[in-house]
Image (cartoon, rainbow over all chains, first blue to last red; front, side, top):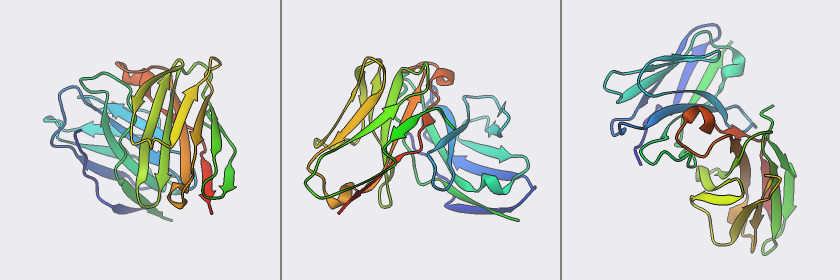
Length: 113
Length: 117
């Protein structure tokens, strides 16, 4: 399975943008990039996914490098509620199956008031 | 609220015992996934069912088994419990089983915390 590399932790201030990086140099041509997050004492929560083009939704934006070897999750204006562990996950590849997600250690995002 | 429900919320039992965890997927979702989250192993995929059939297997121990019923709810059975089985167990559901990430987005329940004493 293609792997992802994320920083262990990042810190940001409330109401400022946050850029969470993810490296995935061995990504296959059919792998989608998914982001999930896990708030304290809760189950993981879907954030966004993309394949090649940048994507926006109500929660965040996903910027994907042209060579697809890295991507960045952008929270435009962080709030205290965004403090969570963010996971960058590759999936939906050549098998096409919705297999179980392979969670790494993720990035622990700390938001300072 | 993801729409996925799990019962019970907490379970305390002894080594050697057997427990059953229950999951009801979101309305309309046909796939159910089970995950285990422990401090040392992180979040690990155990098994997936789609419309009653086993679809994919992850790091599931032989002592563990699961099934999905005709009403699409799922149960995870854990037997001969060991101290190391203490963990959070999450269930997730999705519409599809693969091929379309928009349909394969997984929605997680609040989890069942299992403590084995």
